[in-house]
Amino acid sequence: MSFFSILGRYVNRQFIANFFIVFFSVVGIILLFDSIETLRKISGREDLSLWFAAQLAITRITKTVEIVIPFVVMVAAMITFWRLSKNNEFVVIRSSGVSMFGFLRPLIIAAFLLGLVNITLFNPLSAKMFEWYQVLRYRMDTHDPNAVLFSSKGLWIREAAPDGTILLIQAKNLQQEDSGSVWMRDVSITELNASSQIQKSYEAYFATLDGNTFHLKDVKLLIGGQPVKKMSDYAYETTISVQRIKENFIEPEAISFWQLPDTIRFYEKSGFSAQRHWMRFLGLLVSPFLLVGMLMLAAVFMLQNTLRGSAVMVRVIISIVTGFTFYFASQLVFAFGLNGYIPVWLAVSAPAMIILLISSSLLIRADEV
Image (cartoon, rainbow, N blue to C red):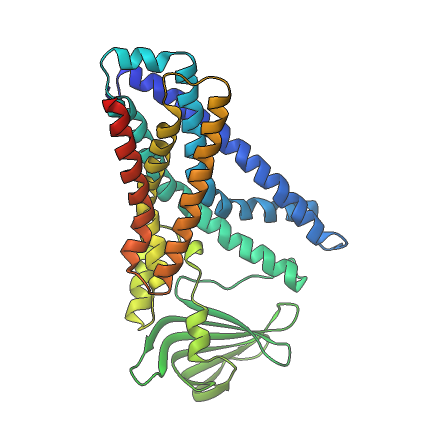
C-alpha cells in the first residue's frame, strides 16, 4: 500500500484529522491551566493587564507542546487504529493480502513528515516565542512594562550588582585560553537601574576577564546627554567569573533548529562545552524517528481483529502507560548523556531506537500469526 494510493490517502486522512483534533484539545487544556496559573501570579498587579497574561500563557505553551507531540501522535494513531478495527476495515485490508507493514507504510511516512515539519517550521516559531516569554517574565519581575532583555546568539549575561544596578554584558567573540583566562571582542557592558532604564554603557573592542575584573581596551563610555568619552584602557570591577560565564550561555530551547549549528560552532571555538546544545540538536534530528516509534507502539496494542468492550480500554491504558514509561526512561538516559556518563549520540538516539526495534519485532510476530 503506497503513500499516494487511494487506500493510503484514506488512512492518512483519518490519522491527520485525529492528530489535529488531539493536538488542539491538548493545547487547549494546557493553555487553560497556564492561563489560570498566570492570572494567579498577576492578581493584585495593577500594572499588568489581561492581554499581558494572555501573551505570557501563549508564549509559554510552545515549549510544552514540543514535549507532548510524541504522545499526541500516539493517541491519534490509537484512535485511528481503533476505528479501523471497530468498522472491520482493518480486517478487509488484511484479507486483501496487504501485510502489516504494508498497511503501516503510508502512516509511517506521514508521522515522519510530521516530525520534519515540527523541527523545520514549528521549532523556529517555538524558539522565538520562548525568547519573548523570557522578556515578558523579565518585565513582570522588574515591574517595568517597557523593559527589554538584551539578547543575541553569542554570549550575553544579565547580572544584578550589590548596589541594585543591573549589568548586561555582551560579546560577539569569546575565547578561553588554556590558562583559564578569557578574552572577548566587541564587548558591551550596559548598566541599568532598578527600573530597567539605561544609565551608561561601555563599548570596547577588546577585553580580558581576570578574576572579577574586565580589562577593557579601546573603550567608549556612553552616557545620555553627554559627549562620548574615549579611553584606551579601563578596569571594570564586577562579580562575573569564568564559571558564571559558563553557566549563562543561552538556553538551547531558545535557539531554533537552523541556528543551532552556528551556535555550537561558536561555543566550541570559544573553548567551552556545547554538550547541551549538541544534545538539543541531535534530539531534534531524531524526533521524527521517535514519532514513528510512537505510532508503531500504538499499532502493537490497537491493531487487532477483535477489539471489543473492555479489551479496548485495557489496551489503551497499557499503551499509554508504556508510552509514559518510555518517555521517563528517555529523560533518564538524556540526563546520563548530559552529565557525560554515556556518549551524546547514544543518549539521544537510544530511546527512539529501542521503541522502533521493540515495536517492529512485535509487529513482525503479529504479521506471521
